[in-house]
Length: 350
Image 1 (spheres, rainbow, N blue to C red):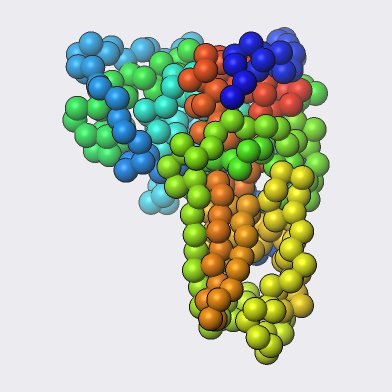
Image 2: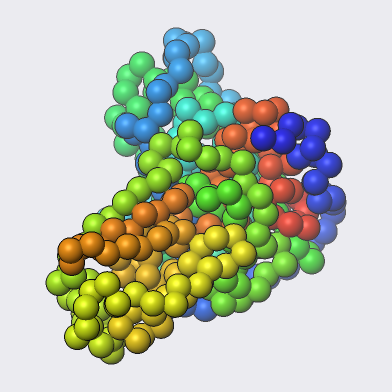
């Protein structure tokens, strides 16, 4: 793994003082999928990591919200269909708690807070939920996952809740008002769980090139829980899924001949694959067969298909486990963001 000095040498310049511009550009829908939420799916936050020793909650005072985040108000459409009004600070706390394990390094949590703030403001400016009298929602497939402090405390347990509450509040407060921009406009600060050695170019996943969402190296690997996974499906299950999706496939031949002409992107993810003569993108195949990522191989034996998958998520933007690996090496949150969002600039939000 590169050391912190090498990562800093790769850093794109961060500037300040640029005015925020509206960013209403929406990425096109992927086949068999939809416009992505920031994180595609939240990182599982329980049962994955061995938790460090937790200090007494009394020794961890919760930082006060920053001036910018404390003054900004958001209307959040909850999973129950109800809209709640809360400060940006409270909303970001719930997003970071839901989207990234609280056991991660503080610098990774700070980077996550900036991503969450940037993406929520981008969604607000795009007017994604204006018809529902809301600014953002708590659905990770549309906006970002959100969890209440009560739900988070129940998930973490009494011993960890005090320290983790303060740790996430500090990540939000320490980055108060900081957002990522490119050319004076808010970026789509998408993120995902773990990469297969490098991130993916947005054009390869959603068909739209964005200069700050290009493939870069990502340092995580087999130390990530469930970094490699498998999915097995019978030939009948594959045939049923293809039929329900209306793909127009011809699966009359031997199952071993169904998957043909698999191509890959420069990052190693599947770019396209033919199933019974119908071409699928890697993202479409991932959705169709419920794979953790589009970095996969497929084999067949005795009428059973095995998909061997590496990493988790759409692969675009910041890898959360990669950010944590960089933070463990002493890389700060500004440098982490500079690495994953090429040419983006930091500034204080409006």
